[in-house]
Length: 65
Image (cartoon, rainbow, N blue to C red; front, side, top):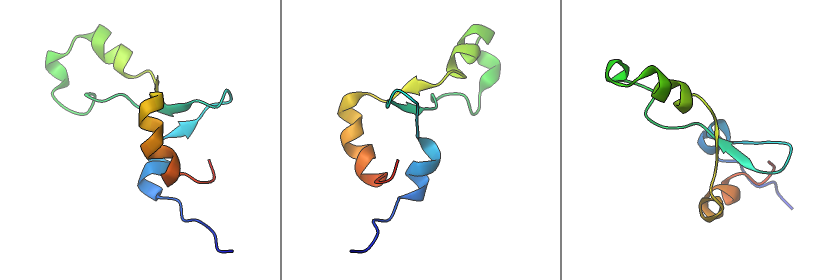
């Protein structure tokens, strides 16, 4: 049986933590940063957990994660 290919763009965006949840980076931290407060930017740096309803689309792209 052949191997299943991992979709590399998805592999670079998501990681699995030790408890089995999938981590992601938060949006809105790429440009137009001068109008965002320091507190908002600091909170956007923290990783978030992918919702269970979105895992349906992500996990088929990551067969070996």
